[in-house]
Image (cartoon, rainbow, N blue to C red; front, side, top):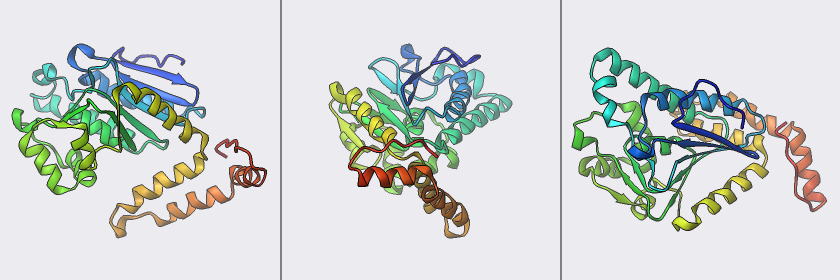
Length: 267
């Protein structure tokens, strides 16, 4: 993949056909997020958003020990103590998280090893979370006297519900992959040796399907979980109509009638 100039080497960006891959590359700290990684994550996502060949984006960690162990605690004194530094840090995290959450293409978190604190937050910003059976999840904020703002906590509550969210935060303990799946945090748990192949199959399936349909569903699902008064129903109608007016709709119908695999172009 062409280099994205000016970003930290702690983010590895790869392109494998129609799949964009972002790897958190801070293995000596279990891929914990530095300020530079948070800052540049949004830049990388914007780049992948504008690449018409990319149909799916996978986020994962470098190595086998961790997806992401949250924020790099060694930077707390520098970045999260003075009020000015804390505001900049929070704004940067919020910006990249918001870009990931609203990314117009499907996103998958491929999780192996430790997924801790901000790593959980990153994973739940993705559309789908698939993890190895040896993955470990925790949000140890209560062990550090960290406060979670509502912007960071609400997506987690929306995903797992109030009771599980309280359990995770109150106990600050580690949860297994199975426990994470049972509370709705994770979509799929697979043997660690099969994780790469399983996610590759998922990305292939998604990439072969109609991009306009996937884009419309992503938008409508996001609108459906909002309060009735804030839903953009005109947007929902527009993206649905775009599907039926598209060349891909005609291609899908022809392929069905001709009993062949459709070749969608996203237009």
